[in-house]
Image (tube, rainbow, N blue to C red; front, side, top):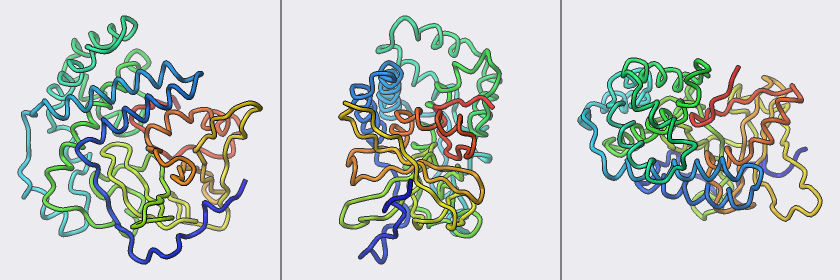
Amino acid sequence: MSHAYGNAPTGIMHPPEVRLPDIEHFAHRARRLQDLAERNQPLGEFLTFMAQLATAQQVAMERFTPGWQPEPTAFVLALEHGMPPLNVQALQDVIDLPGEVDALLSALELHVGEAQRPLLTALRELPEQTGRQLARQVLAGEAGETHHRGLMPLVAAALQVAWLRLVHILPRTPERPQGELRALCPCCGSPPVASVIETDPKSSGVRYLQCGLCATQWYLERSICSVCEQSGKLDYLSLAPEAGDDDVSVAQAEACGDCGSYLKIFPRAVDAKAEPLADDLASLTLDLLLGEEGRYRRSGFNPLLIVED
């Protein structure tokens, strides 16, 4: 169905073009996931584990110092030329992946139950070369081998910590991407997980895409497809509330009839606490229904969500 969320903002002439995540980002996400778990009974156990994972990410972020830390000056040239300074292709083989994974698992094993402990053990025992191969698959949006699929969200979580850590050593905020890069993260070059429409005075009504890897947000005009940038065949789809359901879902799918893709959009006017990656995980029912319908394919990149082709 169509609705006003596709309209352009009013009164905001120069919204902040790029917004970097704060140092407490994973803690904010953990709280949102736990809140969503309590409101979403079918996905409650899954979302609770994801909240525990986000909590572990925050601990790893605060307490671990990686063995490889670039100098801020290493990113100056990319920033001057408007290229993503933390490009995943350039850095995926040099980050301290074993250290990041170990720090995450050390924090996570204090909270998880017996059902998840075999996954933690298996990942600890994985050869570094295999772990890096899983990381490459995660960053490429690939599902990987079936026998490793349960480990990939944990590797993805470690990668998120590594890249958010890198965001905080950038000498300055990157500029809004232009041209063919407009729909890619200005920090790391990854696709967005979803978008959010703001309500705060400085950016009321403005749509920001959010990176699924490093959580950077960047401004993209509304009423255009984030994949093909067409606007003539956009539709806004959502789940109809069931009878007796008091929980209004914030998830919308901005679906494009030109390229056949959709990206979720979360208006804070409906839920001020919406966090794109957390709310993406909590609205998997919308993905399932759109997948069954077969008209649109998902474009959102959520590293914690391993989707089999």
